[in-house]
Amino acid sequence: ERVLTQSPATLSVSPGEGVTLSCRASQSVSSNLAWYQQRPGQAPRLLIYGASTRATGIPARFSGSGSETEFTLTISSLQSEDFAVYYCQQYNSWLLGFTFGQGTKLEI
Amino acid sequence: QVLLQESGPGLVEPSQTLSLSCSVSGDSITSGSYYWNWIRQLPGKGLEWIGYIYNSGSTYYNPSLKSRVAMSVDTSRNHFSLKVTSVTAADTAVYYCARGLMVRGLMSAFDIWGQGTVVTVSS
Image (cartoon, rainbow over all chains, first blue to last red; front, side, top):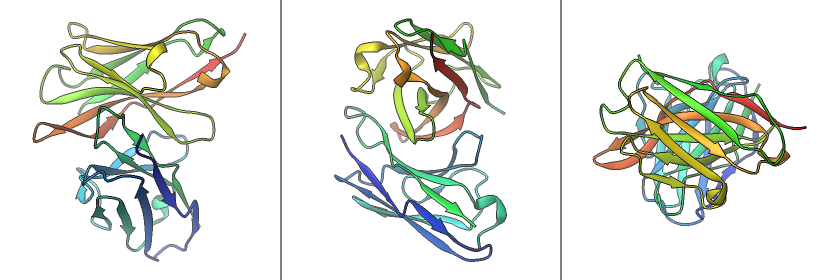
């Protein structure tokens, strides 16, 4: 199983600031990594797939980078609606199953 | 606009079978290149992928749940379903269905999610 480790677990930031979230894979997942945002009481929303491709309708302030085992999600100029939990997910090997990281909570 | 909607009992007794359905609206479940997933979120915890099914009916399940999980698809009714047998309190969770993208013929991320349905296992 490919384990994804996200850091930090919680990040306290202010609106208008920029932030970078980290996701590390225990084995290479190539570029088969996605990022999701989950607001309280809502389903996750796809932000980034293929490590760096923004999903339809996602603002340009969200950007993803990385490959193999190290990935980052950067949010520039945080808006109030960006305070949520962010998950990374790998889909590199259907034989081994798809896994999610444990999440990073962005709080004000 | 494609929408997914989960439905099923909110309360299941221990040792019984949990059965959920995911209705797809706004497009045919057989159109385009997609695969269909179930994911769950344990109380206060992260996300756990349960398995996927293609509209052809082929499936693949999370190895940790494989012995208790079964998925099916009904293309005539435009929905797919999940069964989890021999449930315990550890199966209490919010269950989501989600559409998986196919990019250049390979499985990719989950772009559309249902709102989720809460299932509690208790007597």
